Length: 141
Image (cartoon, rainbow, N blue to C red; front, side, top):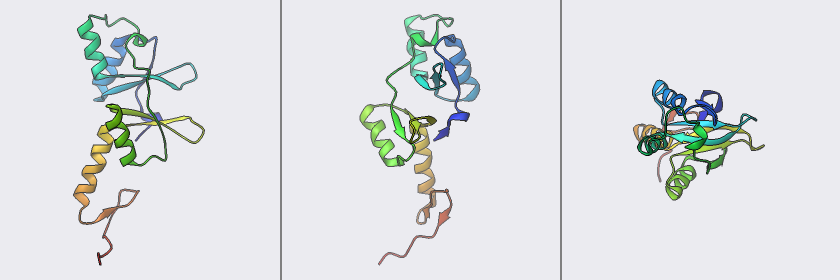
């Protein structure tokens, strides 16, 4: 998960060009759209930007015209495998992470899951603990 304070954001009134700048300058695949309460109200992905281009939507148009509002939210306690299942079921690549008060705390993407799986694979035959450290596995009987 990427913490909320590290997420590139915009408002629905910002021009689409702002999102393009955020995606390119930060080498990311999505920008979270925040409402007046500083909570996620949408997301704009690279796919949304390409679709807007294909439709001829001007870069000066407001982000709200192209943002997806069907946000997937997950509790911060969701494990990696359950998040991956949700992405697979919804054919989605990003989810908003919320705490026990339903407050925005971050974003998880399929990239985050793939990176964690790769780290687990490199750790084998040992295991990785939640803090990312590699530990020798218990002997198998």
